[in-house]
Length: 125
Ligand code: AMP
Picture 1 (tube, rainbow, N blue to C red):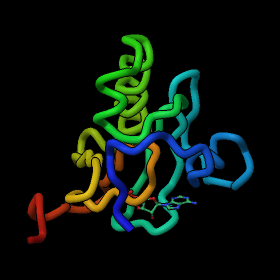
Picture 2: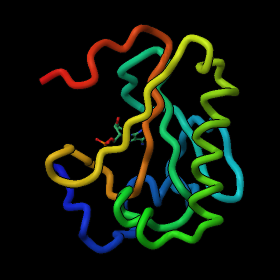
Picture 3: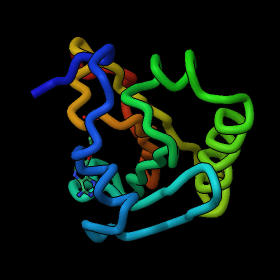
């Protein structure tokens, strides 16, 4: 079910549980501001999710309320993960679903990193 990006943060969401270590994930990178792990249902050879450590429902919530340090730390982490995974030279795509029309399912901000093959058109429909 797509989530409403304006809903309050729900601490029981699956990525909050991954952050608390209650559910395993295949970690790619971790620092003070971000955790990156492999998507459980990869849509491309490289499909990594990067999430902020803070409790933010969506890009809207994060961009409006996170501190400058959290925003800088998170954006740098996304770039570092792509770089460290060798995706810069072949190219990659970032995607962050936000709210109902996007189909966002997990109510904790996540940026998808897709790569490892030509990714086709931006939207399928
Ligand atoms: P979105 O539709 O943008 O909210 O994307 C949610 C993503 O989370 C999907 O690509 C799922 O495959 C992925 N996902 C859901 N549960 C897990 C999990 N436990 N570990 C890793 N990825 C997950």
